[in-house]
Image (tube, rainbow, N blue to C red; front, top):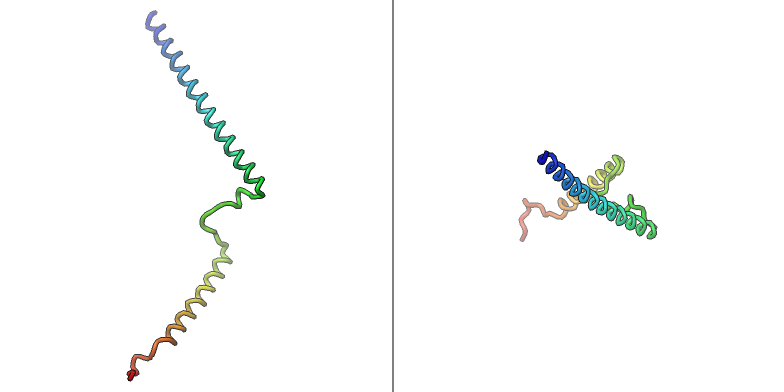
Length: 95
């Protein structure tokens, strides 16, 4: 009978520890939610949209990618042409 009472006391202590941990976790989550809501309100007050404020690489549509490709082809063709015009003929001796 003594073993049963001791094990029940351990369960009660563990239960209190688990409950205390869960209450602390709930408080932390509530604080995070409040902080995110405040950030959202602040951003909305400035007239911004959270989705638009994304930073990082800009993703292009296939049409935009094709236009960039054409533009870069023209650029490099111009560079090659300018370089070939600027280089003197190697077979001609300079005096």
